[in-house]
Structure formats: structure tokens, C-alpha cells
Image (cartoon, rainbow, N blue to C red; front, side, top):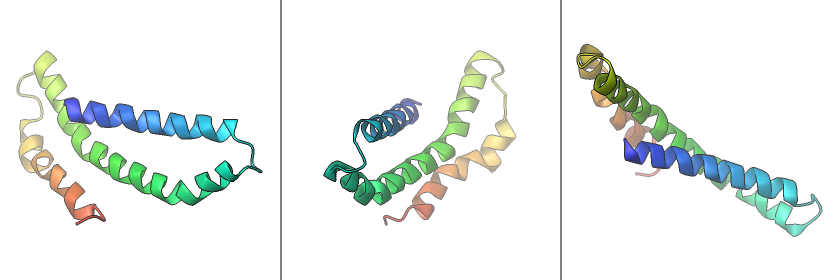
Length: 96
């Protein structure tokens, strides 16, 4: 669960930093042009990170519920669907 939480925290930090930096910079400066040029890179990074979060969050939720509520929670769902979710990330990733 730790990698999922680290990924989530760093995604939020990146989004917050870009938004804070965007507000601080005036539209006429060259830094604003740098943000515009790097927009595609930022969107790709967030897209890949969100794809990883979407595939790993069901595991995290199920593990937390099994630990604190019901040990037999979602056993069939794990066997049918969740076991194969991490492979979706590697197939859908633009980097081979």
C-alpha cells in the first residue's frame, strides 16, 4: 500500500506546485511560456500516475477492509478482477 500512497501524495504535490507557480507568474513572462511548453509533459505524467492509481486503489481499499472489518471481504472479486488490474497499467502505458 505504501507505493500507492506515495504516488498519490506526490501527484497532489505536483498539481499544487504547478497551480501555485501558475498563479505567481504573470502571463507576459517567459516562465509562462515554459509552462505552456511543458503542459503536455505534465499531462502525460499525471495520466500515467492516475492510471497506476486507478489500478492499485481497489487493492488498497480491499486490504484495508479485510484488515479492519471482514477477512473474507471481496474474495471472489479479487480472484476474478483485481488480480489482473496491475497488468492493465503496463498494456495501456505508452512506454514499452
